[in-house]
Image (cartoon, rainbow, N blue to C red; front, side, top):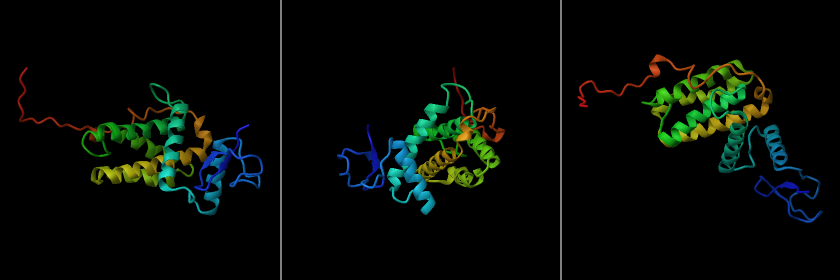
Length: 206
């Protein structure tokens, strides 16, 4: 049976050593799955430091993205709103993420007002009503300044929000089964989100 240990970089990896010869886990610190090893790391570092201190920023972001995509595959349907609160939170953030990386849309900037503001509004409203959500929401609220951020700064903040969302759902697995009644892509838009780039002085001939 495959065994996993925590390697010298502080991340889970497959143990290929013979029994008793592992340089990273001779005292029995082995796990049946990669997920189990990662959970051990998360809990250990959170208890000691409150963050993933033994994992580099790049590695931490990669792990968060992988977890996020797995949650998306698990909870978000191919079309329409998600059945669960966790699914709709992931769906809303996926919308914001997709629009930035594929179209350059940012919160509160030009067409990004139409494509993203409603989704962020849903996240803000929902997190404020969930226990422990207020702290997570602090990172999402910063996205409202997207129109004034450089792309690199906006990208960094999106990554922060992705990590926060993954961590929040990990700590609140009941959200995966809690029924969702809202469509974050359509029900939280406001009139001020409409972006009109029509120039009334232009003439169009058909």
